[in-house]
Image (cartoon, rainbow, N blue to C red; front, side, top):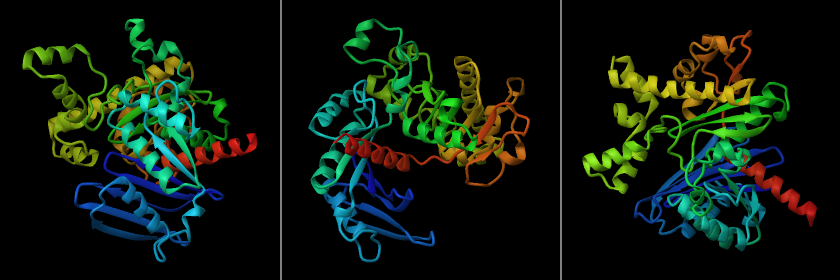
Length: 407
């Protein structure tokens, strides 16, 4: 089976194309600045020897339909393509940011699913409209393919009510769907499976804390293969200190700023989501730049890094208490995979809890799944490269096989 994975934004289309027999990435790329006059397309073809053949082009892509048709042209291109005809694309897996409380598992897309997706727009107004648009365009372009929706929130569906509810009047949940949903679920699910395999166990045999650290960041408590809590909430704002998001904060701070500075809701939204976090503390949301600043003695960069790691450490302790026992901590995503200093600070001083990091292993430049804890550490510490697109392709294939079996 060949699966095209699409992640559609309001002005972009990211795509990856897989041959699922060997779970091999054949091609991928991104169409950016759709409808903005100076659109850009980057396409990669993976050669048999592993090298990458890259094409970059600029020009007007007026809308998502033209963008996706350009993707098809590139996939069929005599030099840069990997298929002779679009009919070889048997399935399209769509990344959907938010499934709400009804769309809680991978689903084959039909008109009813799209209608249910429209109901989730108030919960994810910046993301889900683009996802819906991507589905509609892709269904028109790939008329013979099965289309599958894979939800970032689905992995967190097993969180119990006492952990996902907020202590607000019941009607806030019943009528307005106010509750914790969690995000980055596809990444947490993928690295949890990889960690179990690394430890020689089945997912249901171990307890993990998975830590996804990119520009956005979240953690998940994974007990016996199921998520029982996560740091993000109804929106991706809660939890860890992130690149531009503040994470956990006293909600009354917003009332104070509204009264004191006369800030309206839109201004507060921008402040907390786009101007806070590492960027707000030290002027950059790029961890590499932050570390450069810290090494020059920059106070704000040092403080930002300490706050960033401290929040991770607090949640490690909290999730150990939630699960009662812990087999491994798993770091993933851009910062989690590449920043030894963050990993070191987050696990520092936790030997009494059975968490002991090997500094030499931690500083290794390897890009593979690896253990960075000491040999005698009761709790293993792992670095696991994430692959959300492959996980979406796997979920797409799995759902289609179930459908074929039932029919």
